[in-house]
Length: 297
Image (tube, rainbow, N blue to C red; front, side, top):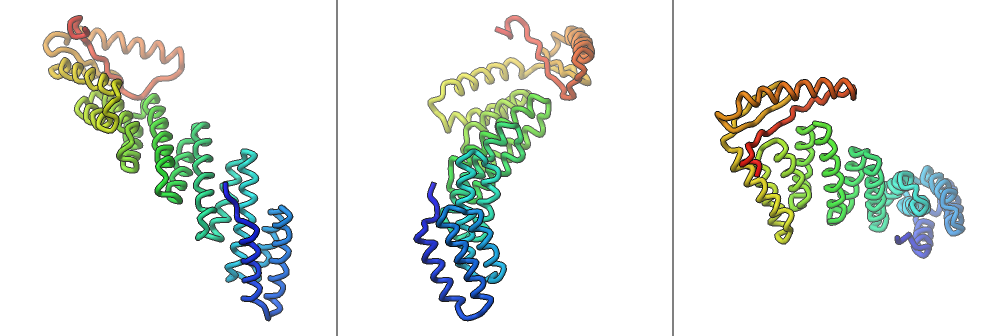
């Protein structure tokens, strides 16, 4: 990671002296700026920032002192990041960026810190915060393909957890939003394909898997998944449904209606028994598909 060189700080300080020399208030601001400069060179970045803040309060229009203050916050943030205190590093680097938005080093560093903090939040399953932080990193560095890939990775993981909790619509909405941000990311298309598959929407599922196959043409696992879904779609195209409150029983039309009602009763009993034991009753409706022996093969 690059930091602001001391030579740059020197030149900024002397430029500031020329600009403000001549008034008592400016001279006082200059004294604080000089004090901050000394602290900075000694590596006492927090003390340097405090002195530069006093200088800035007396000379709010001082662009040089703002740059010096930004440099101090930047160095503080770097120290925290090196010790793994990423969240606080983000806060200080944001302060640095707020005082010197034209500084490319600070902008790039803030993007890195936001990305790292976002990935750490995702590890703790704080997905909304993770996506917010990585999105901030993307805004700071729009050309960063790795940052966009990280956003997609976090969103796909969150969508998978939502799906496992029966929150299919929320999962689907998140994946579509992510697809708008990362239209060429194969993992998002694959996750959408699996979501549609679980919803028994075979056409939409195949569309997503085929799109992913176009991005990764040599991936045999995607090709196998497409073949499997096509077979299931062909078998189930003429199936009827027994639509109950908790379960949707799908079966061969005209052949399994009576059996489907028996299955539905067994499932309802199991729902109550297991729910009572676990004290948890899933709200999402579940689909059960009844195959004949030949269809199953």
